[in-house]
Image (tube, rainbow, N blue to C red; front, side, top):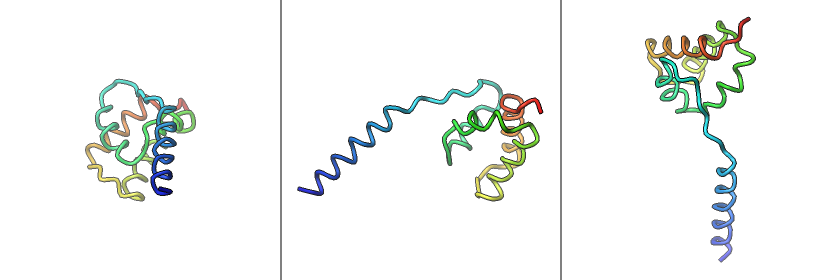
Length: 95
C-alpha cells in the first residue's frame, strides 16, 4: 500500500511541475530545424534564450564546439555550421 501511495504522489508532483512549463518558441529562420533537432536532444531550448543576453556571436561558436567536443553531441560539421550561424544571427549580442 505504501508503494502505491508513493507512486501516486510522484505522478501528481510530476504533473504539477509539467503544468507550469511553457513552450519555447525560437525565431523562425533558416537553421531552426537543426537547432531543434540537435540541441533539444540534450537540453531544453530555453537555454538558448536564457544565455542570449550574455553570448556574442563568437561565443556561440565556442558553445557549439563545446557541446560536440566536450559533451559528445552527435552533430556533423555541416549541421554545426548551420546551428552556429542561426544562433549568431538570432541570439548573438551586438558585442
